[in-house]
Image (cartoon, rainbow, N blue to C red):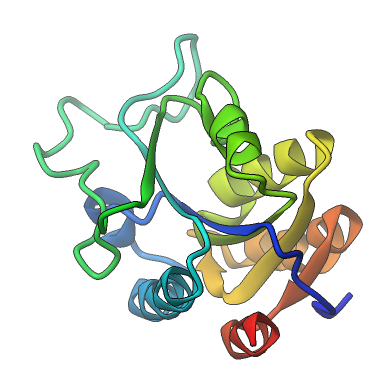
Length: 184
């Protein structure tokens, strides 16, 4: 469904646009995702709406076949938020250790205290951090909108599946331009 409206209490949630992840090979150029996310962040800040910058610093405990760092340590600046996004004064920064931004963080509490009823999501990877966050936001009762030109994935098929099959069941989707227009 195309994005139709934004609640007065809408927050932008930017998932994992950090140096280490934005430098990976992706289905769509990460530079475009960063630029569109930055445009949304600027528009939200100009309206006095919350901007949440989420970054992952480590993997969740437990075994898996695809560790975050193959063969050792991540670079020191791997988890630093890309400079195009800030953080700016007043932004909410959330540090996570799992795919989604809600589990094990105070994101829900901070959003509710700010009167947020809707989230607009951007970030990398569409099928991992963004989708996990969208699912949890939906389960927490938030209205969910995904900026389709401000997300990408390392896997083009996974990206298409999230955009075409998963996100329409969780909320609405729209382009950066359309969402900025809805901000008014």
